[in-house]
Image 1 (cartoon, rainbow, N blue to C red):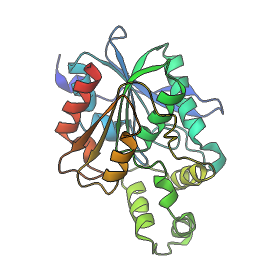
Image 2: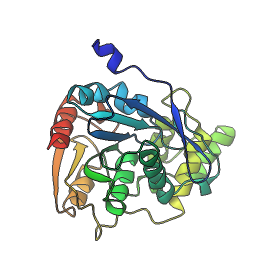
Image 3: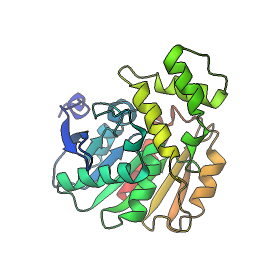
Length: 262
C-alpha cells in the first residue's frame, strides 16, 4: 500500500454527544486490529497532532487501527461558545460516546496536552474501556487556569493588547491553526475553570501508562511529579522538544508505539 494513503484524512464521521454536539471522528485501519483512540491537545486537531506528525502512519504500520476525534470546540466538531458546554466530565463522556458508537469495548489511549489530561480521567473512571495509555505533555492538570480570561476576552472583543505572558502564549497558540474558533476555545478555557480540574492523584489510572513530556517544556517537572503518583507507569523525556513541537518527535513516536505494543 502506498504510505501516502495511510495518512490521508478521511471524511469525518460524526458522533453525537450527550448534549447534542457533533463530534468529528476519523478511522484508519482494519476493524480487527487493536484500536488506538487518539485525542489531541488544546487548540489542535486530529490532523495537526496525529496525522501531520506521522503518528497515524506509524501506528498503522505497527498493526493498530486508529480512531481520531476532534474534541468539542476543535477541528470539524461543533464549537459551542457557551462555557457551560465544556467540562472534564463532558470531554471524557465524548470519548466514551465515540468508543461506544464504533463498538469498541477495549482500546489503547493516545493523548497529548489537554487530550492527555482527558485520557488520565478516562483511564481512571472507565478502566473497562482502556487497557493501556500514552499521555503526552500532561501537566499539573490546571494549564488553562493560568490563562487570564478577562485579558483574552478583551483581546477578542476589541484587540486590547494581552499583558500576561502566559495568556499571550495561549492566544498565540489558539490563533495558530486556520479555522480555529477563538471564542469557542476561550469558552472551553472558561468552562474548565468552573470546576476543579486537578488530576486526582489519589485515584490515578491503574492501567500501564506512559507519561511523556519534552525536555524543553516548562511543565517537565510537574509531569514527573504526576507520573510518580501512577503505580503502573513509566516516564519518557522527549529530547530537545518543547510543548508545541513534542508531538512531532520521532523519539516520542517510537517510545509511545513501543509502549502501546507492550
